[in-house]
Image (cartoon, rainbow, N blue to C red; front, side):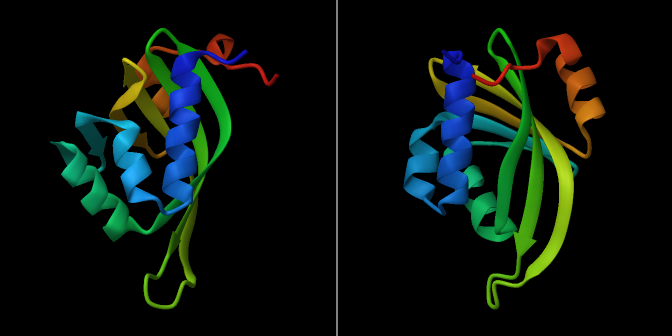
Length: 130
């Protein structure tokens, strides 16, 4: 069986990719910290604003887990909100912090190596498929 932290992060991805902001908020800590190339901010409202602006889909590729941290390599696709056309694609990685079953931190990196280093992880922390 998967670790609860990994399950929480995968459920978070499901809500994001389904375009369900209410479910995404419910799966996130009220003071969720969001960090990336443009800095950091806190709170569910910031998360909801980011999701609305980014119009991104993040498909999990590989996952790594230790303690309350999860690193997920993701295929990211950004779409134009008016036309739905793809405007960008990249493979990115995100470090998630999980507290009490809720995503409490979301820290995006441009690549898996950076994310693993940031979390202090190695290939040995890879979550094995069931």
